[in-house]
Every structure is written in structure tokens, then in C-alpha cells.
Length: 414
Image (cartoon, rainbow, N blue to C red; front, side):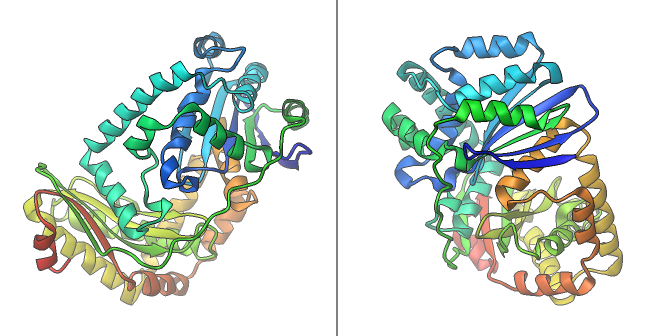
């Protein structure tokens, strides 16, 4: 059973009870890298690291030992629109997890010496990312599809900001964004909704309620070609178009279109590029949706001398889908896959906590699995053909990393 409560302190609480012995609880903060100014680029991710460094009463080591002592797992991640902190324990130890998470979310220590130590860790993470051409091409595509907008920036942030930002700026960002009105708490497993509500009210009583961040949508401009010349063994390519925002009614049709294009091993691109021609090990399409924008993109890695051939095959499939949509057989297969994928992803408390937490934070509601599958089943051939014709005929953006120049790809028609 799923329960949702708007607490007096400002937090939204959502729980789902399951007949298991574990419990997973997460704090979902509605702030990510897109909510930073350029001078703050990387603070959201920096904070994700720093909150686990302790509080005035708990050191980082004490937190780690407390969780290890009960066999618990604690982690966090940052995205462009939210940051999540979660703990998974046996149900009987969930009060400890809630106490630790509640404490780091309200009174993090942010000690200068720990900030400086973690600063170097994050810079190493940035360098590791820059060493991976497959990561770099995704970053360059984001910048090209959303130029001069925070959605186009890498979540890890700018090295110059990470190097120089001080504790006062980090604490100021925390105090502005880590407020109850910008937080969803989600829990799944053997949990008691009423007890969690009471303990959250106690923890956050008297805290300034705050508000979700104000956002500005990206403009319509895109940059058609972005090439990073690098002496790599493999060319990394991302070709895509703008898409609808995450709450668009068309998201179900787009998900089915995406699966047929390159979202599974039976998809057109996987079969034609990998299985039939052996031109790539991995080729995949992905739909991303934000509060006010989105994209559909195809990613592929191939030998540099085959890059043009692979791109021509991708373009041919995009053109064909724009003109003809998907076949009845493809749509039937995509619906069956999405239904099974949805059900299989909810086999444990962690997955269910993530589903309900993200749903409430990002959509303001939590649909049942039956409601989701019903909406997917209701999509028609005409629905898919309509969104394919509009999106896939739009201006396309290509990001590439490999041993070639922009002039070479432009001369090949890209």
C-alpha cells in the first residue's frame, strides 16, 4: 500500500509497505546542477559528498561504523534536477538510518579541513571522467542540445569552481536549497508511515520551510555539430533531437518509440548496426526528460573509419521512423518489454523507494504500476507515428569524440 502525507514541517512523505524484512529510506532534494549559477557549478555534487563527512555529533567514521554494525548500506547521487540520499537496512534498524540521514540533512558539519580533503577527491573524479571519451561525448552533446543553459553543464561541475569554492558559499547553498518544502522523503519495505511522519516532524520542527528552486527553460537554439578531436581507438558519437518535458502526455508514446529505435536488443539500430553488420559493440537510444525540456539521442562507439557509415545508418532509421512510425509488431513488442521491465524493476525495497520518491518529487504524484501499464497499453500506432514525425524531423545535433576534425564530419554531411 502506498501512502502520501504533506507534513506540517513542509516535507512530503511517501511510503510503500512490502512483506519483507528490509526497509529503504531516501531523502530526495529537488535541487541539482541546473539550479546552480556558473559560479556555483559543482556545489550540488560537492554537497552530496560533504554531507556524509559528519555532523557536530557524528564523524564520518562514526557514521560508517554505525551502518556497518547493522549491515546497512548508505549512499547518494546527484543529477541535473535533484540529489538523493538513501539508506537500506533491516527493518528493525531503520530508526538508526533515519536518525543519521535526518541529522546530516539538517546540521552537516562542513568542517573546512574535510571540505579541502574532499575537494581533491572530486577533482580526481572529474579527471577520471575526462579520461573517458564515452563520458566526454555525452557531456558535449548536452552542451550542444542545451547551449548556454545549466542543463548543458556536467553535473560534476567546473574544476575552477571546485578548486576555489569555500565553506561559506557551500553552506549558503545548503541553507537555501535543503529545506523541507524542497524535500520528499520516501520509504519502502517493512515501514510504518505514521511513525516515520512523527519522527520527521520532530526532526524538522522549527526549520525554515523554504521553497523549490525557480527555473528558466532553455531557449530553442541548438548547436548542430560539436566535435572533440582526440587520438582515440574508437569514435564516440551521439546524434539526437530535442524532446518533450518529462511530464508530457506523449512520454509513453516516446518511450515505445525509443525502445523500437534503439532501446533493446531487438531494436532497429541494435539489429542493423551490431547484429547484421558488426559495426559497433554498443549502440543505444535513450530518452531524457526534464521539468521543461527533453531529448532523444542515439549513442554509439565504432572504429573511426566506420563513423560515417554508422552515422548514415542511424540517419536512415531516423528518417524512416519520421516518415512511417513503427510497425504493429514493433509496438506490440515494445509494450510487452516496458511492462515486464517495470515489473522486474520493483523486486526489492530499494527499487520501490526510488520509484515512489522520484515520482512524487518530479511528477507530484505516484501512479500505480497498473496505471502506468494501462497508459502504455493505450498508446496507438498513430500516437507513435505522430511524435516520430514531429521529433525526428526536427533539427538534429551531433556530438563526436575521435581522431577527426569538425570539417571532416561537416564534409560528410554532418
